[in-house]
Image 1 (tube, rainbow, N blue to C red):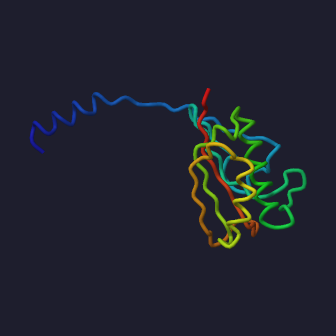
Image 2: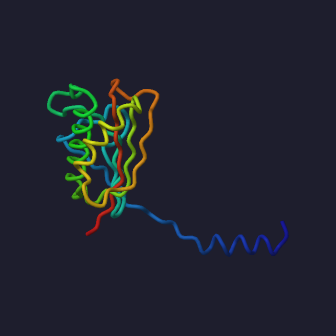
Image 3: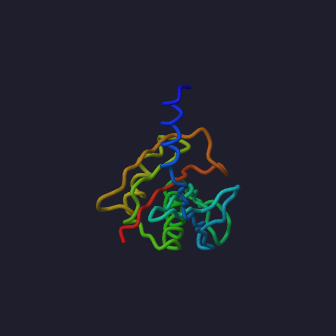
Length: 148
């Protein structure tokens, strides 16, 4: 490297600051405990990153019965509990990812899903996953940004 390149690199590095990010783990007993080494959600500044939730009833630890519609409602109720624990609401959700065991269940999932996001729904992707934990039929994860 020539002297000018080294000088430029030194000036660039001298201008860099170490940035610390406040990272808060969000957890609530109103949603199922994580079934692996992850948090229910992580809050960084005004943004909340919610881990995927499946339709487990936090009171019983059992997967919701009666199929995709019941699992979708339960997963969204679980996510709602985590949102609330962090001081957020469904209105703060900006992005959602839906994982389906079978894309043929898209219509049923979508009908249940839309009851939580009537106006100004968030951006969303829905894909068919190879397999979902506990052989669930649906898993949903979210990102929310505080509007306050």
